[in-house]
Image (cartoon, rainbow, N blue to C red; front, side):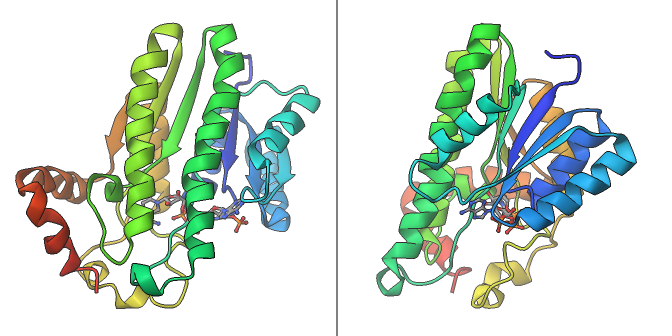
Length: 259
Ligand SMILES: NC(=O)c1ccc[n+]([C@@H]2O[C@H](COP(=O)([O-])OP(=O)(O)OC[C@H]3O[C@@H](n4cnc5c(N)ncnc54)[C@H](OP(=O)(O)O)[C@@H]3O)[C@@H](O)[C@H]2O)c1
């Protein structure tokens, strides 16, 4: 690892990504902050520089645009930056019945949560494997363990992230590169700040976890080289309970809470 290790965080302009940036900065890491809202990234970079002396790079990029992963990798290379930890945090999801949804929105969700994440794992693991060290932290979700009627595409993308992360960890960890899937449940962020989410019955039943707590646990798990971390006892209980429900009954059961 470099003298001052560097973490690249996608989706660092709010929520869990911003909390992860604060967490890495507090542990004396340098940062590359990526998202579309450059002004929010610049403000965060100034705060972290003033508070911790964090070396911060800001890259404003819409990750759903064509070839975005390659553009990001090339930009990092052109700045001569070594990435010790890649954090694939940027993600989105919309609620609503599958057949009545705007396909363009779901296509973008798959692009961001699946295609770009996988491409970034591929690009950034190369130099890490050459050095024989590095960490990848993929923000999956408790949703990855459970099919989600009315949030079907989002849950499916997170199942993909979980599966990919586990498989890559098994492939790469013996060569010095660990891959961790962080699985939060409902968390305080901007994720639910759009119309429709207030109707989700399941959300009435849960306590939203602070993003700071998710970030602390996710960074701990990453630096300890763990494969999967589920955040909080309630989310662990949900995951373990879901395992006990017969597969054919699970999606219909979840549907009762996802109206
Ligand atoms: N909140 C929860 O309850 C929860 C639970 C489980 C998992 N998660 C996962 O946690 C991750 C972070 O979400 P969050 O809850 O912190 O939500 P959030 O506050 O909405 O943050 C999402 C981040 O992704 C960035 N982003 C979105 N679209 C982008 C694009 N096209 N290009 C580049 N960046 C983009 C946003 O930045 P810009 O808008 O500035 O581009 C923002 O920084 C996601 O992967 C989400 O699925 C969240």
